[in-house]
Length: 284
Length: 223
Image 1 (tube, rainbow over the protein chains, first blue to last red):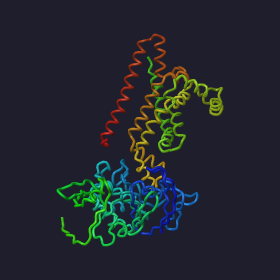
Image 2: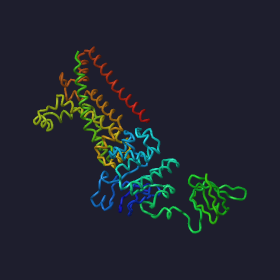
Image 3: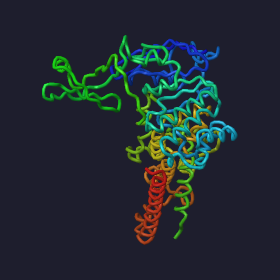
Image 4: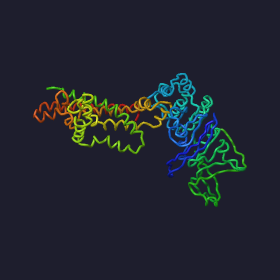
């Protein structure tokens, strides 16, 4: 059981902002931290790791990590941390990066095989691709067999195919090592696939906490399909209006009535939903 | 013609570079990591020798290190070390004179290291000292080489401070730059020419090697 009750004053984009988080996490959970940038997600992770100070209390498996006049140094907290920018040791080969953390050749070999990096173990980080670097970084974080794995947007810089591959590997490693994992992520499909709990932060507070299905599936009432998107353009074609809406990486055209068209402005954030129709699903 | 002044110059420069590296390393690390309000004051203080006339620095050092000052008195009474008009005094003076040339490249080097890389090392359970020697320094070799070579070269090139604190004792404190000054004063232009040409040649080779090394390092890391 991980118990969390921390305060910190942050200097955010909109001036000063208090960060106040109270939270308990079960052992073995895979928790996704979500929310707009600047909401305090990364800071929360860094406080947990001991990289930033805060007031309050952190208790992990009945051991106090942060208390009154007491803060366990980062070196003694049993965590693995994966940085968004990988942060590999540039002066060491892939294998040395792992062995620097813990000189356990067998474990290093095992992790490199699991992540298909064995062929690259003599290479230096500067010659690796983004996906390869991130895998090394994940392996490195697991070298101490940490009880807690913290991931700060680990896959955000990768292309979709590589993301899916690494998501599978993350899930595999989470299960094999039995870690409690906390991951900062913005990608709903990633969260849905990996996490069993989502915590949404806004302005330094938790505004939503539940299962991915409860929080991410945005249909209400009898809605069958519901998407959030950005209105890019409204065109008048003969007597009808056509709106171009960006949903994620996709653009769609929707017919809107003239009344609706009047109330909409380019750049608006909109919700697009339909009721009672049968979607066609086919493989691409 | 004796080459002794050159040997003294290089001995002085090598010793100064070595001692300063050890002393400046913790200072440069502290300056690169701290967010404290005293940082600008410390930075200004370390940079002072760049802007002060060597005579000012020489005068204060002479005043502080002589037998009449508590520091000079203490060293002479306790360790029998004379800090003015001696080689030891020259080393002490050079350490002050060349301090910024060691601290600034090292500080820039530490600041250029990805903070997350250092944090990854702490998370791996490594102490600050292990992190500096295993992660930070190996990733800033150009900065380390620049700091050491420039300090060395700058110490070889000093004149005013050396003259004031060391005088011109043949075989002990008469360094190359002072020797050249004396040759010119005695209108011995032939030897002054030879000495000066040697200084130009050596300085150029030293600087060229730094730039060549850094260019090669940058190519290797694809910068």
